[in-house]
Length: 112
Image 1 (tube, one colour):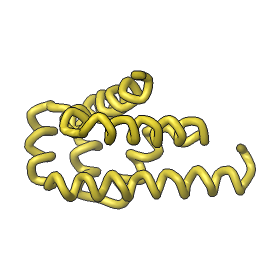
Image 2 (cartoon, rainbow, N blue to C red):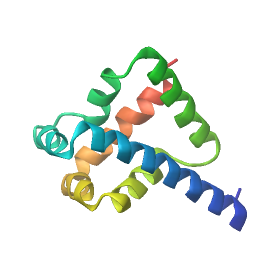
Image 3 (cartoon, rainbow, N blue to C red):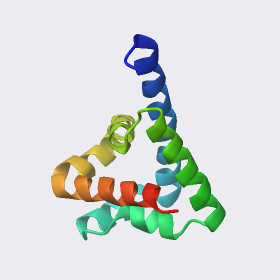
Image 4 (cartoon, rainbow, N blue to C red):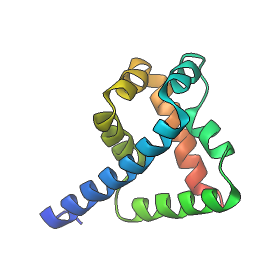
């Protein structure tokens, strides 16, 4: 999908996924996320630990569908940072932190 339509579809799916993540982050409370990030804890890991098995299954299915459509986790995180500038300071402030979160997310998607 290198056509304009394909790029537009990938961007649409990235926005949709980022909006869902934004809702989840707002439910969790951003202040606690800042504390976790400052302590070097994985926001993705902690969120996924708190999910029910059914929710994990749905998240994994949705994430793998995005990958099949050519939407990598980094594209979703970039869109999420655009939607939440306050989260961008957390993710961009520590490049190693952002990379570790991407690795955690990719590992979760590979699990069966």
